[in-house]
Amino acid sequence: MSNATIRADEAAHFGRLAADWWDPKGSSAMLHRLNPVRLGVVRAAIDAHWRGDSRGVRPLAGKTALDVGCGAGLLCEPLARLGGEVTGVDAAAENITVAAAHARGAGLEIAYRHGDLAKLGLGRFDLVTALEVIEHVADKAAFVAALKPALAPGGLMVLSTPNRTAASRLLMVEGAERFGLIPRGTHHWDDFITPDELGALLAEAGLAMGTPGGIAWSPGKGLHLSDDLALNYIVTATSA
Image (cartoon, rainbow, N blue to C red; front, side):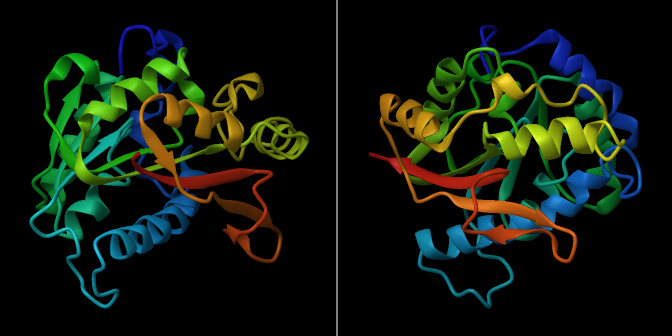
């Protein structure tokens, strides 16, 4: 992320949550519920993009992966277990400290870096993910423009984010945050982005967006994949 995209207050907010990040009953409990859903989409996208065997346990073997806005490594660790050579980048130094310690405890080799993606000189990656991140940056076009050079030729990008709808305002901001399911101040509804807006930003950066899939919530199913994009959605992108 460039200095134009990193918000100091956002980095500080998530940095304060770092120590609690891996507690499935703590402040990141909702993220723990979301992670299996989005990981399922990422796995399916990997298999489809590289025409792999969906029964294989290490579809990222021989491939590099970059998770931008990695937090304390909740996605990085599964990507490493899928065989990827994984790097995680985050704007909050506290998150990187916790992520690195947790990976060591799990016996996983993951390269964690703190700071500005555009300035870190990390090179290109076969898989680039930025899940639940773009809604927290100051300049979305600059953020997408910083992601593009990190994607290797023939690579795959996956992004997820809340949609800017009446439903997301009611359920994610007024509901989940007010009742303590998500830490207060995590989301700012005006910063949510619609699929059409994200598609336009990706196109400007020379990336083609796939068909968005919805991540919905219901009392019976909890968080689940859906055709309903009103709450949250996840998309793939490839070089146009």
